Length: 377
Image 1: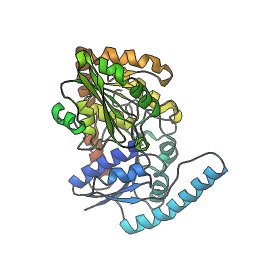
Image 2 (image 1 turned 90 degrees about the vertical axis):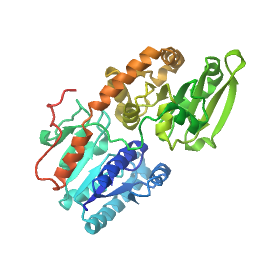
Image 3 (image 1 turned 180 degrees about the horizontal axis):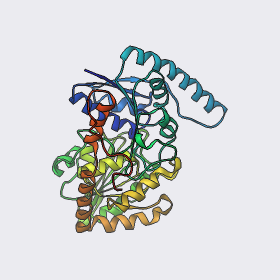
């Protein structure tokens, strides 16, 4: 069995595809080791996967100011020593990085020690970590139509984002039972990624009575700091009661996507990949302070391909109307679901996985995804 190191901690958007890759590698008889941060989101998520090995790697995000820069430098230096010892001990055949501050030290040390390196960027604006580390990589996986200057064309491949095995559409009545919702009522899901989004949570909470009058029940993922899960009932049509459920975190994403007729969410690459896998229509509200406006770029492309609608956070006053029109239009929702099915078929993840085995020296001939320019965007 071959050892693979996967650097993927720091956010759910980095960790979730790392877990998906680890699941595939394990099924193929390999031994993946996930390198994660000490953040609560990382610990909470990996605890669900006792069959997968993980270890915390020292590191800190780049922050401005004297204190932030000092912490960054100290933690990354610790990460370099940690990575050197780890690679010497584990002797991996390949290192895969999904971006973020946990990626830098292990990728650099892997390059120094002659270990093949692959990087994956899921956003349509390539992040700082991937841009900085691409020179040390043997392969860089990017979304279709995305590239950046000074990258050796031979390194580049276009693929989608790996999604965990268990994230897939399930029967609606099963999904509704998970949250105590009525499977026969229209359901609006409001979420903001692994850290939630205060603006979206407030928008949904303030409009719970409005949606009840429309006979639409709400499921709100309010974030880890929001307290305990709770549910309330508001009066709906003809005196019926319509439920609003608020939860701090969701451990059952398949149920969340499957119960929702429509999702309001941020537009991180991980969320979009899961929407595609579960064929759930969405109205995207990009996080306006995302680095290099990558969430806005993700949303624009997703809308162009027919996977959703988009409302900027600066225009939240029109979100209610956009959602009301869409959630009541069954024909349009079905058309979006059909487009999402087409988008899933277009992703070349099986070939990406096979390509990783080629890079690791475990396969003799290349069965790779196409290099840059060979796949239409």
